[in-house]
Image (cartoon, rainbow, N blue to C red):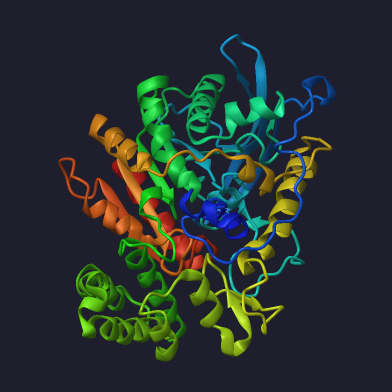
Length: 517
């Protein structure tokens, strides 16, 4: 997810312009939003921001490795699953945190076997969503219509795992998973809970893992979902320019790329409305069985042309608003009378409430076609959480904690923080800017061999695909076509929850990995 972008629907509206898959994922698929749905008070969360002195914390277990296998591509692949820690030290050498990772590696001595480092978002999401939802060797179902918190936390072989083409390292930032700070609350915020500090220490964690496991000669890839998509290009650039580590490729899943592009309901710029309308249209088309790239090309052309002209004309052109109302209601399937009340500007909160109102259900900001019953359908404002976020927290937390503590045998009595509201609340988001886009440009410019794959789900309103479409269209070609490729699949923020989309995603990734050799 990233539920990454997710929690954002539970955070204050001020987080709207901060970075969520969310949402994040959850994905993933982002607490800190790319855009925000309804507000709801988060449940109390323990731990992440209130740190005990190091002397009061029991030591974490030593690294533990077990042997497992998975059926993929018609054959059995044997691998080693490792849960371990990387220490984080300050300038004096004092250990100030312990970062826990889960790695899946295929035994052998081939120095050219790739290794992929994966991050989810939030801020405050662990890496469980990419791990057990997208590319790890085992998966648990979450993120689609019908999933529930009480679903059994039982994993199965993932037929679309990437382990047959790369070793995989899933990193849980401080305050998520079992990773923890060893300094007090104020110092923790300074060292770990800000956009800049986050990039610096996580880049060093990647470097330290490579050294620890003798993998500096391996081809290296960085993957990030939702707010992890904010991290990925910045980590790649930091690895290049500060750590002395080249990166062969980047994969950004439902990324939160440009904080400056996100607006709210009274935004003067048409950009936020342009970004959201195609995803609303995709959900409507899918509900009618008419979602195709050709059908989407129509709305994408509209938002680049007539929509912008009519939006900016406003009341100076008596026909502008009526034209917007006609087109927007047709694209979204919403009642024209409702769209007329909004002057053709449909915000995300209203859309998610109204598109399923006749069924007395609400849609998810991560995939508006994933619904839950509205517990307060008569309320003027939405008073519930997000259908996907509320359904995925229990099975993903239980599945990951069970895997680490029971299957691997890495025993700890700490709580596994799949989504930490405390980290998200404490996060210093800084100023809204396009640093991930700037660092992406510089990283690609530095390395003529680096390639990038950006992927989205059509229905995602937490980190809409059209943001990336517009960003890529403004970037230089860097000497060849498809240095930066965009792929959009059926589904939402965690489109990989759908088997067909997960299969297409892996095929596109295989093309990236093969072209980078």
